[in-house]
Picture (cartoon, rainbow, N blue to C red):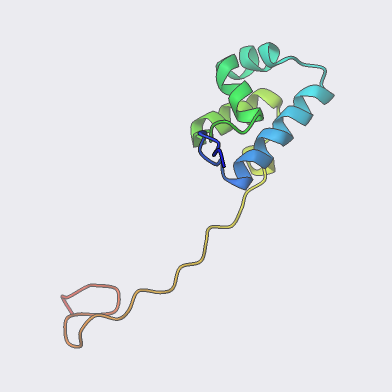
Length: 101
C-alpha cells in the first residue's frame, strides 16, 4: 500500500481552509485578491485551502482580516483533554509548586 507523503493537517485547520475558500468565493475574489488584501502569499493561501499546510496563528489572523471577518469566526477544535499531573511528594510545597509556604 502506498502512503501519502504529505503530513496530515488537523481537522480544524482543514475546516478553516474550507471556510476561507467558501467566503472568498462568495465575495467573488480570487486567491490573488485575498493575497493582496491579507498580505499572505498566494502560494500559502492555496496550500491552506487545499489542506496541504497548517497555517500559523499570524497567518490565520491576517487571512481573517483580509476576508473582513474576526478571527473568532474561524472554526476551532477543542484542545485534547489531558489528565491532571499527579501530585508531587508530600511536604515539597503547595500543589501549585510554590515551595515557599
